[in-house]
Length: 527
Image (cartoon, rainbow, N blue to C red; front, side, top):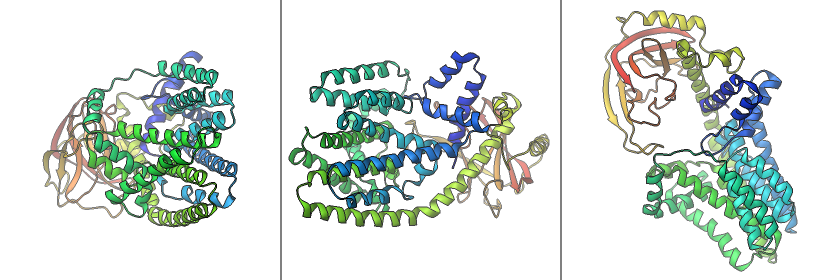
C-alpha cells in the first residue's frame, strides 16, 4: 500500500534528482539531509526501481523491508541455538511477528523498510562485533545503517561504550571515530520548540516515564487496551532483564553481552522516539500507544526480553520449559487475535489510502497551472494518475468554476470557527473552520472517485480535496495559525497552496462525472 506521504517523499527527491545537472549535483541530492538523517539507501532504491522498470515500485521496497524482518527472525534462531536450548523455544517468534498486528508497518512500503531496518540492522551489527568479533564488517554495516536513518548514531555509541568497558580500546576508538564523523555530518536543523521541549522533559518526567513504559508494554493492547494494564505489563517486561542482569547474566559471555546491549538499545530507541513525539499532551500520545503505535518496536524488544529470560534460566530446565510453553501459548493467541482484529482494518486502510492518493493526484493535477512542479515527474512516467482525474475532467471543472454565480444545492451552509482542545504534533493548538450543511446528500459510495470534494478557487490556482462527513461537519480547515504547517488537516502540505484569497466551492462526483457543482458563498484567506 502507498500513502500520500510516500508520493510526497519520493516525489520531492526524484524531482530534485532528475533536474540536477551533472554527477556531483545528482550525488548531492542523494545525501541531502531530511530531518535528522540522510535516507540514502531508500533514495537509491527509488532511482534503481525507476531505472529498471520505468516507474517507482513501492511494493518492491515494501517486500525488501519485510525480507529484512525475516533476517531478524533467522538471527533470533541463531542466538537461541547458541544458548544450547531446543529449537522448540524459537517456534513462538514467527507467530509473534508474522501476523497483522503491526499491519500499518508491514503494508506501508516506506514505513516497512525504515522502521524495520532502523532496529534490525543495529542489532545485527551488535551481533557482528560482540559475538562474532568482526569489527570491520560492523563498521561497514554502520555506514549502511547511517544511510537508512539516525539509529546508526545510537548503535555506534553503544559499541564505543561496550568495547571501552570490555577494555577493547582499539575497537572502541574505531567506533568512536565513526560516531564523531556521523555527528559532524548531521544537518543543523532548527526546531523552534526544542528549547521548550527540553525544559518540558524535566517538568513532565513522570508522564514521559509512564509513556515509555506503556510503549514497551503495548503488545498487550491486542487483548486489553486499558492504560493500567499496558503500563503494568510494560513494567513487568522491563523488570525481567534488569533482574536477570544483576543475578544471572554474565557480562563476559558474548551472547549474554549481546542480548543485554540489544535490549538497552531498543529501550533507549523507544525512549528517544517518545521524547521526539512529546508535546505536553500525555493523554493524546497515550491514546496512540494504546492503539498499538509502532508495535514493531515493542515486538522487537519483547522478543529480546524472551531470549534474555531463556539465557538467564539456562541451568533451570523446568523453569525454562514453563517459560517456553507459556510463550508459545501467548504467541498463538496473539497471532489469532491480531489477525482477527486487523484483517478488516487492513482492508479498510487500503481503501482509504486509495482515496487519499486519488485526491492527492487530483490536487496536483489541477494545481499545475502556475508552478508546474510535478509536470516533470509525469513526463518521466512517475506517479501517472491511473483511473484518476483526466484532463477532460479538469477542463470541465475549470469551465464550471468560471460562473461565480453558480451556487451549490442545497445551499444552506453554516461556517463556524473553532480551536482544537489538544496540541498537534507541532505543539500548537490548531485553528480550524467547520463548514456544515445538514441537507447535504451522502453519496452511496464515498471511495476513490466518488464523493464530495471541497474546491478552493483562486485567481490562478485551483485545489481540491475530499470532504470528511462526520455528523453535520463537511470539512475542517485550518485557518493558517500554524506557522509550521498552515495547510489543511489533510490533503495538502503547506507548500502546495500559495498565499492568497480563495472562494470555496463544493463538487459532488460519481464515477469521475461531476453531478453537482457550485459555490457556497464563503471565502478563505491563506495564510
